[in-house]
Length: 252
Ligand code: 13P
Image (cartoon, rainbow, N blue to C red):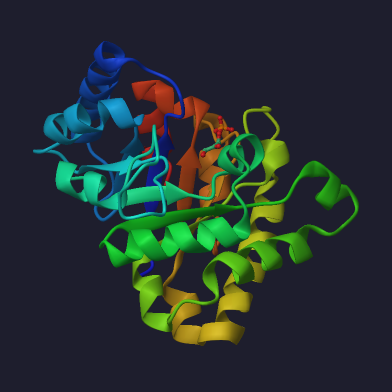
């Protein structure tokens, strides 16, 4: 079902004490009232997931991981499996973030494997994609996005998309203070929905949620969220302050 979602990607920020403090702040803020039906997610680092699950138990806040390994288990020093997440009570994982692609060499082919492993273990996936600045400048952004989606997701059966949330994050807008204009976001989201309509049918296209990410702040969230094909946001920097994150949630 197409849902309204605001997710905070904490990246490599917040130690355990700080994470607990931030969750406390978000809980207080969201209690004060958010529009019914909006899903609120936070993605702390692996080491703080267990505590986050415990601290959010009686709230609407859902906990997501920022990554996972594609293998079931084995000799992969430093990695975390889907089963480990599920066993902790984490039911959502972010995959394909541009920072994973850029700094850790994650390719579309690898992401296809990670998506399969996540879905196979019953995790819901927030799948990120988006073009580089040079792609936009050379007007290749639609082609780049189409390729990312085709290579990592289009091997899936239609039914799998009930457990996938898409997140368009143009790389040039991440952490730069430069946001895609609401029109640019809408244009890409509509393009992606059309791709899904062609590949999987209008029902799938109409029910998949597409989030926008890249310098979303309380000041610009409302306008971005007002666009018809934008179903919510994946928030980085502004998710690290309870008041800002709450203000963004309330903008939807
Ligand atoms: P910023 O909101 O800090 O630009 O980060 C966006 C992002 O990468 C969320 O995953």
